[in-house]
Image (cartoon, rainbow, N blue to C red):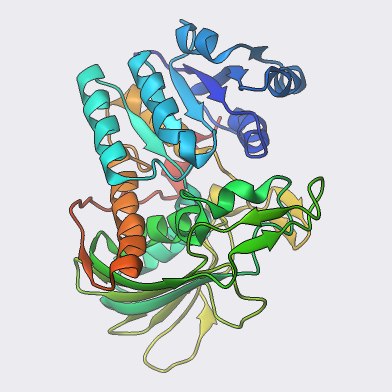
Length: 377
């Protein structure tokens, strides 16, 4: 098996900059080409990052490309990923993998027939902070996790994204856009989900864009923007998940997990870093001793200060899994279970009943310090 796989990117919008700029950190892969329906967008990225701009059919037929990263809009994820598999390439998709469980099962079928791998973001649960939380739980430091809360709430995407319309139609909304970070990390920390129940709503049927260049335009809201869900896990834990774009401010922590011997406070799963805190039965909440995990080290400046950003780690792990013949941490199995969880939350909101999962998965292998270093060049 080759020790380095050629990578192509389809979709040269906002998120592509992250993949182009961070991919060189990781071994086992090399970005060689990119494509976009807007040829000019592909050419601009190709020139900036020293790769080849191609049409989508050219990229699919490129014999140097082994893996294609699907960075299209959510509504196109299924059709593009299926075309990639049918072209004989492995797929790594931005989240969400697909919009329905049926689409995900079709990708599973094609991938199995072609003997190809499918991986999917988010990979932030591979971050140093979340892997430290995983280590703390695995060592039994807070006992068995029995319950918890998750909150991801803000006023919405139309205030900063240059083209936010797709966030408010089918395939968008806070559950399918931000939920993947929380669901993936919960699977990482405590395993698969058994059933869900939810209440869903929307504060407004239209939104006015305040970001440039579309400031002043009105966009329709066609999917719930306020979701309160209950998740029962296979291990018996019960977690509250609130995801909303109808909240101007709040004081809820991103993720708190409560165990039989203490509590664990996990930073925002949207990011790789942050401070993990814990308490024992004495109720004294203190930072967990930091460890020297490479995916927890700050490497970027942001308006909030230095930040750890290692997106592409999931792609690198999938590539190395292909090369080494092992299970990828951001696997199709886990991404598909996440889709089952999120679409069932929305279905529960529509139907007013609890929904049992029809899929399951294993926890991903923990990514310790040495394993993380092995993914880096």
